[in-house]
Length: 327
Ligand code: CP
Ligand code: NVA
Image 1 (cartoon, rainbow, N blue to C red):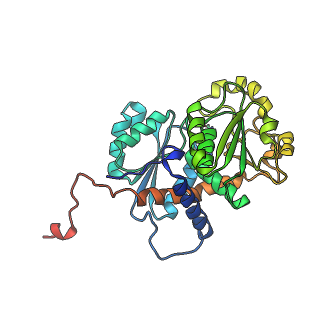
Image 2 (image 1 turned 180 degrees about the vertical axis):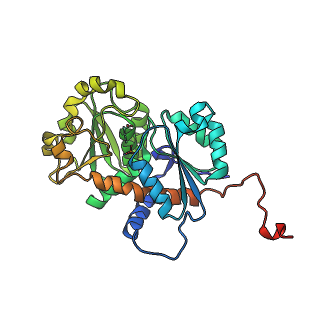
Image 3 (image 1 turned 135 degrees about the vertical axis):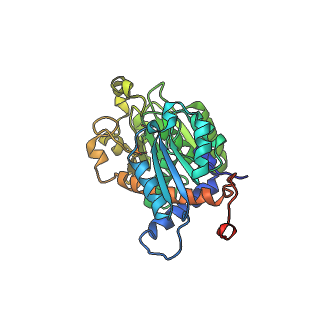
């Protein structure tokens, strides 16, 4: 039985990632065109399970499934038996009997992997401590809209080598981009992720580098990207981190060091005056609302892709035809 999960950016090949971005562009361009055809998710249901807060991911997946003709069940994990200690494996197996895909926002990547191992439907990473691959798809779609293509572009990321950084490094490498990460010592992306991106880059022409010098990273870059300094689950470290990360703020000086038509990106939610100044976030180069919107289009393309390539659910209870029960 083939099940396609999306737990990490590298669950797609470079060609598959590119095809999903093409489909996302088409979906965006034709969003308001009325069709009499049933949507690709007609008669299907998707579960959205959250172990952390969310605004964009929750909204965009819910609307995406509805617009594809399907039904979405949004579940706050704390209100389920998972919140009282039921195992992630039992949860995944039971969900698989009800829905056609499970979209999960959680903590450790291991929780997603365990869920995928026990599920008989696709599992999608809607953010873990390790990666945020759905965000990276929408980000690449946004960059392509502005610059026409991705290969050879330089993306400079400032701040914490976190989940968003990991996905940008990997998805950027798949797209043949050069990703520079400027982080304080001790907060760089994981070595394993950097090595994986470098290996992918050998095939795609992409590259990844890490520096402690924000202005050097910005020099000549096409894209300037930042994210929060303290991610969900790190709130207790917010004050100490704000001192360490101050030299990596995406401010006017960083923008001036970049290419003349560089765009500014942030996955949101943002903290004006911390990782990015208000004038840069709200300024003319900012594409943050396009990024947020593109979550909708990219995730529609992703769900259609995963479901097309996953064998239909073989539920253990046999399906009975209406004719067989009619007396
Ligand atoms: N960017 C993003 O994932 O936002 P939410 O946390 O609001 O879903
Ligand atoms: N790095 C952030 C991203 C939020 C969308 C976090 O994990 O909280």
